Image (tube, rainbow, N blue to C red; front, side, top):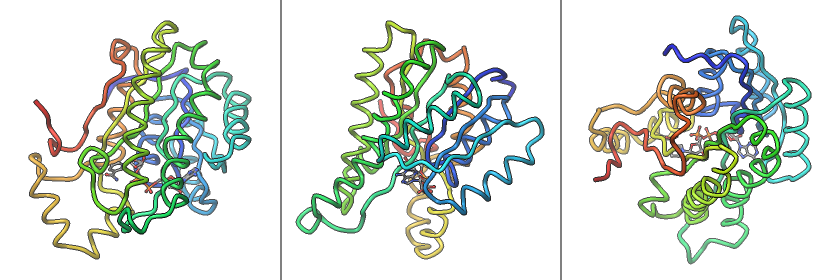
Length: 254
Ligand SMILES: NC(=O)c1ccc[n+]([C@@H]2O[C@H](COP(=O)([O-])OP(=O)(O)OC[C@H]3O[C@@H](n4cnc5c(N)ncnc54)[C@H](O)[C@@H]3O)[C@@H](O)[C@H]2O)c1
């Protein structure tokens, strides 16, 4: 897409697969050095081997659980040791308990969504703050249509995603004085996970497509990746505190 991120360093959490992998690929191809984290060792190794084949790409693959303070701090330290700075933090990792309505959810079920999503984003933002301040960098957090619409059976996920939007706005105001920008993305992408689900539920796939004005799900690298490459660029530095739907128009608002 023509944006050059040479000299910039990014962390993308939960990037062994899915949207995280697509965004990391786009950032690497734009010239950024990228640290990817995940908790799936095998998938992380496979992705790391793929990244090794991108010409000139500099990456670091780190096993780091976003629910553990010491693993988050360690991942941030290793990134700075390897690449010297942090310009871009992308809080993409998330897991959740789904398919259970509120009356049957436990506190532990809800905490799974909150801890892997909202609190992990908070931990990474705290750990990266000194480096983001130095670099006048940017943070991208993740929300979801499910949180906006209140999808059933996934209260912990929905709460975590909406909490990320509050975290985004709060940090955007608090860190504006340091020229750190903070935004949120709501993606609608075709990933390995969503593909498996749609293969098993073809009617659901048809229904989803019918509700997307552009008539297709997004591509993790070429759509979500292109957006974060832009958000990481100098041209995006007057954007902060906002939520960007990148979903083919599905959740467009007035
Ligand atoms: N797929 C979509 O269209 C869609 C829609 C709305 C929101 N989102 C959001 O976009 C982001 C990526 O979605 P995806 O579909 O690629 O998800 P995914 O489940 O395919 O990938 C998430 C990755 O995060 C990792 N992860 C989970 N818990 C972790 C932890 N504690 N520490 C480190 N890594 C952890 C997983 O191992 C996995 O590799 C998520 O925040 C998701 O909520 C996705």
